[in-house]
Image (cartoon, rainbow, N blue to C red):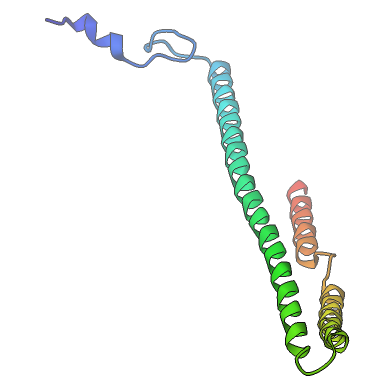
Length: 146
């Protein structure tokens, strides 16, 4: 059987350990809030670090897969080129067949290089949108000071 005095044992107490009926000063409340915010921010940063490590691991695996795909694609092109060379060898000397395949790959390389040069020329590393929003943020912060 419980008495009226037993009900207080499960109740909340303040961070400083005083009984729940006591009042805390404003300084204690601010200190408790500051400590709680500090703990919350630290926990959020730890969570962000953990999530970032997991995502970086996934990206690393994906990059490895792309690297493997690149090697496999290169080997595929190499063997297809050999097959085309030997196929053309049925109608012409092997040297001429190899030269034709080499010229075809040279044309492909030139087209890709020109297209890549055009894409790089069109790129704008200045990040104009980001620069504009940063200027707007700075202007907004200046208006708050005044």
